[in-house]
Length: 576
Picture (tube, one colour):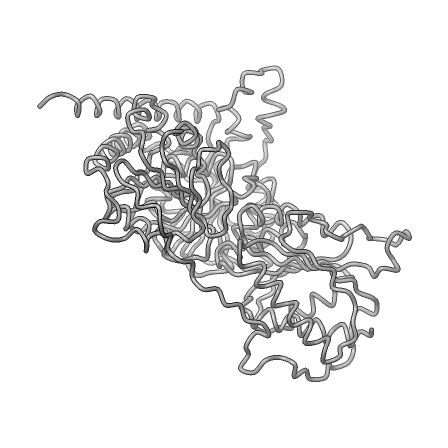
């Protein structure tokens, strides 16, 4: 096998990825992966994004794939470089994000003999990868070129279908790694730029048999795991037409319309409300939402018929309460349920949820007031951003504030978050990837610890020229831990759990070529966000908060909302 063979095969491989629909790829520097990097860069239909390190590259690719719904490739050199992609691969597997990992490796004769930058890369990601393949080394015969085209198609279609997730191809490459002569033409591709192997995926059929739910029904919608589309909008429309309460996680794309119950997290903290609003049927679409009160409520509904709907058959039932699993898409489910007699919902059921939700929302608005805070920031972004915008939310406290405080809107932003494995890894890089893979502004809502964790991701601002608005909630540590029992362990909590850092992010902004603004009030925050979205480049909008004050505000807001709900319930129960 010569360098010409290597480059001919890799050119055909990358050409086939582009024919299948790949638009983006990410690279990290190295020597052994030189043929992979050059082959991706020289494929004109793939936009190849350069990164300084593999962890940022992996999460940038993840964010781009999450927003576009299409596989994104990421390549790295041999050795521990591939290990640095592991967090992104794990997140992609749990979040069902299509990712194609192309690791360069030393050839077999250089393994386990003390050669530098060599580790065991075979099945490096274990079960986190949907499929692993050691590519091997071949002469670029017509038969081999046809074979590697089928390999590229298999990798692409495996990543994107049933369920979506990461695939890993390992490429042992021998020196020389650079080619100094022109490549001959290759005519092994299909005519009309078609992929060598097409994949026909007929739409799933609507469920049949078993009748239709009736009575007191709720729909619980979790994170959107499919290609971007109108599934969330259709679900919201159906719930409104059928008058079924819709408990929609912001990541579902369904939190809008008159049936959407935005503050279910607060409502279900009230034992009286939760007990009085036990449903007969629960239709669960997608993943379980973030809300712990909602999860606890679902776990206690042993007598209700809980139906889980998922086209991939993914098993999201930690409490063993689901009684039926429907292997279909939400769209096919709606096709089967739509009709004047398909669903018979209790006519007063939605009204009771709606009244409680409105009461809780009004109490939250009064309690939050106009003073800048973490909850008010989350709520305001949900109110300000339009349907052309994407709100990327960090895990830990920001995603909980978004679920708790984000209002239901007809024309709100798309919400994305890394909630597969629920880590804060690579959040900045993932947001930049999402910004690179679509049109419209992207706003990242992130805490200070998550930003510090992926501070190197800010390099994309200057190097790649991808615009991003970063709203930074800086409470000098891990604010979420104040909500947990460990906060009472005063001998170790502040240093080892809350972990204050004292970082001045103005230095990071200057280092990475970002603008920095520190608004003093809500009006200044709104103006800063609008200004950033209208300009090129990246702006960090820093909001200073206090961890203990944030805890107290959350408690006051929850207490006010629950009190308002209780008073509403008593008023409705009073005889006319």
